[in-house]
Each structure stands twice: as structure tokens, then as C-alpha cells.
Amino acid sequence: MDKKADRKMKPTDVVIVGFGWTGAILAKELTEAGLRVVALERGESRDTYPDGAYPKTIDELTYIQRGKLFQDMSKSSFTFRHSTKDTALPYRQIGAFKPGTGVGGAGLHWSGQHWRVHPEELKMASHYREKYGAKFIPEGMQLQDYGVSYDELEPHFTFSEQMMGTSGQAYRVNGKIVGNGNPFEANRSADFPTPAQKVPYTAHIFEQAARAAGFQPFREPSANASVPYTNQYGCTMGPCNFCGFCSGFACFNYSKASPQVSIMPALVRSPLFELRANSNVLKINLDHTGRKATGVTYVDAQGVLIEQPADIVIAATFAYNNAHLFLLSGIGKPFDPKTGEGVVGRNVSYQTVSTVQVYFDKQTETNNFIGSGGNAMACDEYNADNFDHAGLGFVGGSPIWCNPAGVKPIANVPLPPGTPKWGARWKQAVVDSYNHYVEIICHGSNMVYRANYLDLDPTYRDAFGQPLLRFTFNWQDNDIRMSQYVTKQAERIAREMNPRAMHSDVMQFGQAFDLRPYQTTHWSGGVPMGTDPRTSALNRYCQSWDVPNVFAAGSGVFANGIGYNPTGLVCALAYWTARAIREQYLKNPGHLMTA
Image (spheres, rainbow, N blue to C red):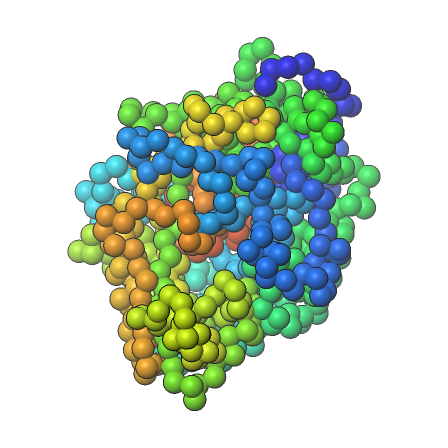
């Protein structure tokens, strides 16, 4: 949209597009540096109260089936196709993933799984080449390094955990073994700020079986506080009560970390900060050279076209939306799958998910309604490069966990193989299974490929007349091979439980990506970071190579997919970028690094 704005606002130092985790982190950090910050969120204003008020928030039909906190697909969506030979069609109904909307974004309705990345996943290209040889990486796979190391990010992982009140048990702190945490986790500079949560019965069953199968299970780090906690910003959390309503819901108990709970009570007190909800940003404005951003143009709730001038623009939208904004704004060269050239839309990735359902006799009551979003027992033997990949024929890996997050009676009806789809036998199977089963999940990596990318759709447009973002994405043999291998390891644990029945749900070769069943919301890439402007849209500080007063944050900056949930790395990178702006950019505005 090139129409002249109806209104031009007073200039500000920083404008942030999107207000989820990364928008809140960057706003807090930059106002502390004395900068005036305007945050623009396309969705409505939300807060723990009234949006998470008890008892109305404990409503599966409203929040999950009808997607109250999710994006309204009637206003803006995306299109999908499996390959360039196919015709892309719009994603019209929430299915495979659940993008958030409104203040807090997906940070309001996430589950609370708060992981650190494995060090080798930040340098995956160089790591695999050095350890297994260049030929080990399959043709068409576009592995690249992030350009930042785990040691550089470690202080920001620690700070993020302290901000979220993350519960857990460390294994190694400052080189010394301190507890029975994850033995595969990299060294930490501090233990978790709150103790690990109590272990529900289903996770206990998994733990016992995993040990019997030779694994080293540990309690997962969870951004659900285990005890009352006040963070470094003065924001207070209450202890989790295992209500089972985390993912898809705002936490009524102030126990699950979110921008609303962990940052906003302190941020809104700053006179340097302004948040404008219902403000849909159309583009980042550039000057006549195309090398400097002058601000953004957005549409407010009344349909008024507004220009917001700013010295620094930060794209902090959800995952793939940063690529969409860059493409609409003409920032960076769009990726071309035919030549492999271009950087915006490159290296999009998802995650592979497989499950093993374990069914018991009626004597075993599993109480699946009890839980919280990140309260898992997990095993990391087959994640990242924690195991020898030589001879296996795939790159990547997956943690294995049992996460009793609270089984919902509408969305989660566990049924063993052979159960009829309806009728009296179906009803009886629901009764026999609902409270007598355990689910094991393999939540694995998805690598980046030349065939998987993002661009602007030539046919479909949103409510503002702009082209929708188009996904060209499908599963590749590497990830299916990895998922099948790790699922077999999970089956070893399942058999130790001595079940009456078990069933694995894992991708098969030739199976196409299916948008209908929910899998995970963890997309990444599109504006990858790195040290080579030929393969990355951003440098190691998440600064645009082409427009140096534009930065980006969120999982869209990931150079490769990872095995864990992305939020931990997302937040650490946001703090990393904020420090680079505060300590380097403000002193000498311009490129923070050269090619």
C-alpha cells in the first residue's frame, strides 16, 4: 500500500512491530537505556485480568476449539503448497499450528517449556562437517551457523530464566556437578531460580521405565513457577497448582511466565514506553536510498492510515511474519529456490513430532487431567548430536519426554488401535482409556532445505490488500528418517511400562505435511542470522545487512531448526540484540559488522 498516510505521529527513538516475548524484552531493555519506545501490536489489548480470570478462562471449547487467543484467519492468513509444482491455497482454519494475536502474542498462550539450546546446534554446519565430513550433509540441505556461540548467549539464558522464574534442576553449574538435571545440558553460570516442579504420576511412570531402559531422565525446565517468586523487574508469580490449562490459555494463577506477568507490570510504569494495540503494520518505510528506515506505516482500529517515524525499527513479530514484513518492505533480497540465491524467506523450518501412546488396565489410574504445560520428565540421549550419527543417514535429533500437561476431554480422547469411530464400543473405549494411558512424545528438529521457503503469494491478499505470505514446505527424507529412529528408542521406554496396548504415530516416507491435525506452533527461519550476507538476512546481532537501523527478533532469525521448543533461544537472542543496540549501536549507529 503506497497511499499517503492520513496522520503522521511524533517521531520516536524506537518503534517495535509486534508485542510478544521479544517485543516486551526489547522495550524493557531499550527504555532502561533512555530511549523512547513505541510498540505496535496488530491484535487487541490483553492482560492476565480479565483475559485469564477464573473461572471463565477454564473453558476448552472457547479457548481451544474456537481459538479465542489465536489469530483470526478471516482477516489475514497464509497460503501453503508442498512444492513449486503445486498451487498454494489459504490456511483458513487453525489446525497444524496456532499463531497468537493480541498483546503478549503466543507468549500468553504458550505451554511454558523453557529450554536452552545445545551449543552444537548454533554451529550446526561447521560441527557436522568437522565431525562427519562435508558429504554427510544431504544435497539440498542448507545448514549454516548462527554466528553466535552458546558461551556468548549463556548470560542471557540465565537472565531469561530469572525473568521467567523458571523451575528446574541443574546438572552442572560453573563446571561443577550440582544435581540430577540433564547430563547433556551445557555448562551453566547459575542454577534455576525456582526448584523443579513436583512429578505427576504419568511422568513418574515414564521416569521409572526410562531408567529401566538405560536412559537418564530428568525434570524438564518449566516457566511455571514451583514456588512464589519475584523476578529482577519486581514482577511476582504464584506457584503452579497443576490445573492443566496452560497451552492455549492465559494463566489465571499468575504462575506461567508471560509478557503480562513477567515484564509488563514494570514496563508500563516507564514514561518512555507506549503500547498501541489494534495497530496493523503494513510496511517498514525506507528513505530514497533504500538503506535507511524512517519508521513504519500502520492501520489503526478505525482504519486510519498512520505513519510512525522512528530512528530504529525492530521487527518482533511471530516467527515467519518477520519475513513477510521484510518482503512487503523491500528489505533484503528474496530467496530464489531455483538459484539458491537471496536471503529473505530462506531456511524456514518447523518441527517433527511423533508419539507413542501407552495403554494400561483399569487398575492403573493416571489422572491425566492433572498437569502443567512444561512439567515433563525428559530424556536427551537422542537430541542434537548427543549420540553418534555416523552410519545413521540423517542430521538432527529429538528429545523424548512425557509431558502431563492436562488432558482435555474434547481435544484429547486417547483411543487404542482398532477402536471404532463411533457408537457404544467407541464410548466404552473412551471410558477404558481416558484415565489409563501415558503419552510419550518425540519433539524433534526439522532441518532447512532449498525446497522449503517463504515468499509473497501472487494471488491471495489480506483485508488490507497486501499479498499473503506463501509457504512452500514439505517433509524431507532426512527428518522422517530421524523421527522414525528416535521413535523406536521411545518404544523401548514404552515396553518397560508393561502396557496392555501401545501404538506409535510417526511419519512415513512419502507422507506430505498435513495442515489439519495440530502438531506444534514452532516455525522458525525466514530472516536467518549469520555471518555471510549471501546466506543470511541478518548479521550475528540480528541487524539487517541492508538497512542497519532495522533489527529483528523471534524464531524467524533462527539459521537452522533445533530439537527443543524455541522460546528459550528466542528470548536469549532478544537480550543479546538489546545489549548490542545499547552498548554498540547507540555509540556509533551503523553496521555492527561487515561481511
